Length: 89
Image (cartoon, rainbow, N blue to C red):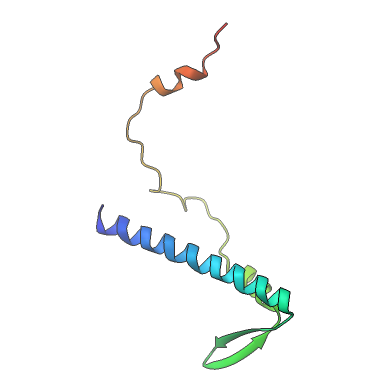
């Protein structure tokens, strides 16, 4: 595995862990009807779950053409793996 692939793998895992933790925070805040406490611009801030979810929506980048470039690697080009899809009439 190259250094680039290793860093991509670590970033992917970190992003997934952060997303999972964020979902748990939202769920717990909703269950307990409590605000979410965060650090914003050098200050502690309390916001509602709705505000937090709205801010997450704003942070998500829109999908753009070409974002997946380089993510798929074709190891072998052949049609042999498609034979089981042929009609058996």
